[in-house]
Image 1: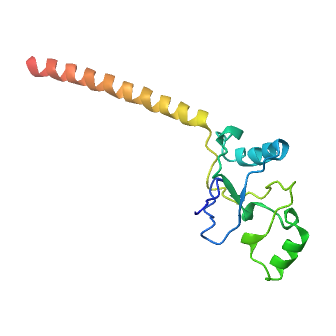
Image 2 (image 1 turned 60 degrees about the horizontal axis):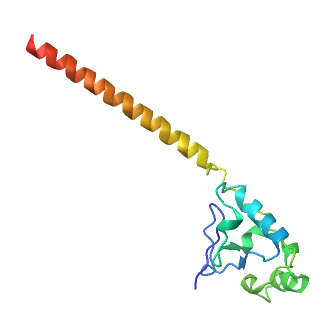
Image 3 (image 1 turned 90 degrees about the horizontal axis):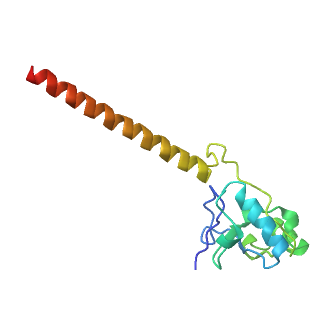
Amino acid sequence: MVYYCICVGCNNSSKSGHGVHCFPKDKGILRSWVQFVKVRRADFSASSVTAYSRICSAHFKEGDYHSGDAKMVSLGLKNKRTAKLIPTAVPSVHANHSAWPVQRLRDTVCRKREIATVNMKLVEVAVILHLVGSRWGKS
């Protein structure tokens, strides 16, 4: 099965050769992982985590891996896909996607309201123009 990184703007997967890591079972560490994802994905919460949720190796520092694994990866003797995280590891590297603004759910709702208001005003103007036009045509 192919696992994809859930971080916003990250297209890495197990298929692309990146290590992908399951969310930890420890509640404290899990909270830290969720907070990391929430920085760029406001709607994410602990209840959003499923058995298929993964974060790829690009979001971890070398020190987050077992020392032997990290050294073997840096020497090219081991693939990063098979390197194991230390139990207390927390993702800390966000990809630089400054061109991708973080969209909040509230912003989306406000934008939909603005569009609905504009649409209502356009309908009102169309009705007025129709009424004025029909009066001019009858005179």
